[in-house]
Amino acid sequence: MAINRRLLSLLFLLAAVSSIVAASFSHSDSDSDLINELVSLRSASESGVIHLDDHGISKFLTSASTPRPYSMLVFFDATQLHSKSELRLQELRREFGIVSVSFLANNNGSDATKLFFCEIEFSKAQSSFQLFGVNALPHIRLVAPSISNLRDESGQMDQSDFSRLAESMAEFVEQRTKLTVGPIQRPPLLSRAQIGVIVALIVIATPFVIKRILKGETLLHDRRLWLSGAIFIYFFSVAGTMHNIIRKMPMFLQDRNDPNKLVFFYQGSGMQLGAEGFAVGFLYTVVGLLLAFVTNVLVRVKNITAQRLVMLLALFISFWAVKKVVYLDNWKTGYGIHPYWPSSWR
Image (cartoon, rainbow, N blue to C red):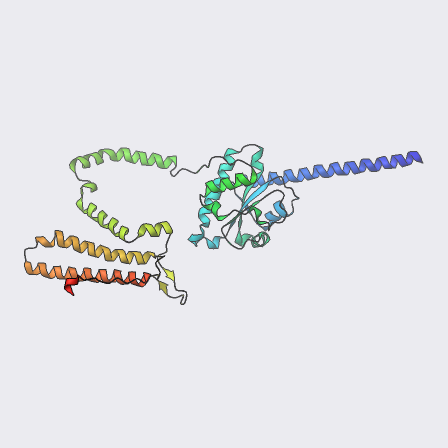
C-alpha cells in the first residue's frame, strides 16, 4: 500500500510538472505566433505601419496575455476629418510613417520585434476608438507590454510632441520604450530619374541661355518684369501676407449667428483675416501707384489742364483710400485718429 501511494504521488507530481512545462511552451509559442504575424503585416506595408481593425486590436492587445513581448505605437486617424487643415492629420500621418521607416532601417536585430507602429481608422474600427476612450484627434498612444486597460492614458503623446513632427515623435518613443529609433530617414525630394531629366534639360538649354544672356534678351533684362515684381512684393508686404502665412489665418470666417453669411473683417486688434489684409493692401497699393504715376509720368505731360485734372483725381482717390484704412483701424481697435492743426490755423 505504501509503495502504491508513493507511486500515485509521484505520478501526480510528474503530471503537474508536465502540465506547467506544456503551458509555458504553449504560451511562448502563442507569443512567437503573434510576433510572426505582426512582422508579416508590417512587411506588407510600404511604411511599416500596420493597419488594424477591431479584430486586430482584439487579437494583438485585448486577448493577448500581459506582459506582451512587444509594444505598440498607435496612430488614430479619421478620413472624414482630413479636410480640416487645422488638425494636420495627413501631415502627422506621413511623419508617423517616416518614424516607422527610420526605426526599421536602424534596427535589424531583436529590437525590431519589440515595437510595432500601427494605425486605426475610425470608419473601420469605431469600437476600438471607444475601447481606447479616444474622442479627439490628433491622438497617438503607446501601448506598453504591461498595459491591460486600454483606456490608460499614461502612454498618450502630448501635443508638444507633435511640434517637430518626426523628430519629436522619435524622442517620445526613445524615452518611453528605451529603444533607439536612430536618425530620421526622410525620402528625397526628387527621385534619381527626375534628377536625371532635370540635368539633361539643363545641359541642353545651357547654350541657348548663354546666347540670350550675351544678347540681353532674357527676362532679367525686361524692365516690365522688375516693375511687376516690385509691385507684387509691395502689395504682399503691406497686406500682412507673412502674418497670415505664419499664423495660418483663414481668408474668411463663418458667421456664428447666421451660418449662411461669411465674415471678411474681424473686429478686434488681435486678429486679421486674409481677405481683410488683401483689402488694406489693395488700398495701400493704389495710393503708391498713383504717387508713382504723378511723380514719374504726369510731370511729362505738356498740357497743364490735363495735369491739374489728373492731379485732382489722384488726390481724391488717395484721400478716399487713406480714409477707408483709417476707418477700418478705428473700427478694429476702437482708437480714433484725429487731425491736429497748427495753432496758427485756429
